[in-house]
Image (cartoon, rainbow, N blue to C red; front, side, top):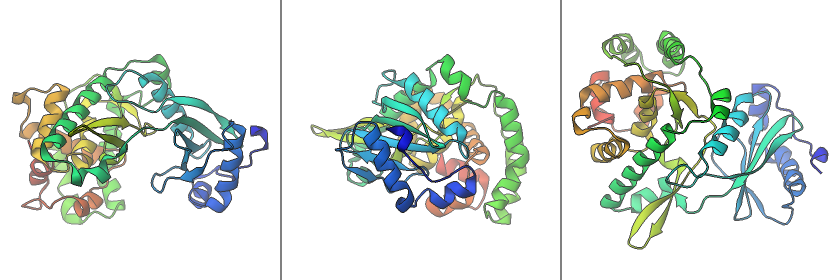
Length: 318
């Protein structure tokens, strides 16, 4: 019975961070939860990555845990979005089987997607197939951005997009300074943001962290195809182009042909693909709620010149 499940306290951020990778405390409770969900005979194995505890339950199920107090919106957002997108995207997404709250935590038991991580498969995928996968991602994002759901609107913020961007802009330099960004880069941020016009955009449903690690692929005959998109916990509603900040950083990773194919498949025209778009995407990357330019600079190819103007056209090359 779920009433017998005893998870470690995670009412504060500090408590959650102390236990989120402690399997000596989480493991027995997760096993009890799995038994309570009627899957006691299945092997339970924790996935190594991810900011939240996520477990493979046999070959067909995934169990994800959310601290109800320390991260109250995570469960509500992912639950609502998974329900809303089911069967509405050109690639599979996890299907919710059971969801609820137990002992100060929330959980979702969902179906497990087939295939392997695109991040692991990418080095072995031929160039032409990579380009076609980019097109599939673009089509998937277009479908995602078209999803409308009152249940999602009720829980997925921000409800004032312009206010969100204004607040992010006011805090941008302080955010990146606290993250360890060099002063030479920090000094460029205000002028760069002032030079970029972010046109009004009706808010749409965004994934916000489209990266190779959140996509699954399978070998299909002589080619590759997408077999899943997951991790909708950081979803939000906002301007369409905010989505392509993470796409440029974690999917195309500075490869112009990959990004161009994705954007064209999404619905951009050739005439839209230019320096102004590259600059807008960098602006959104700087303003992103999880932005870490200091880390990006260690992960992606260095620009020919250490300027934000050069960075825009180097990482979001079009």
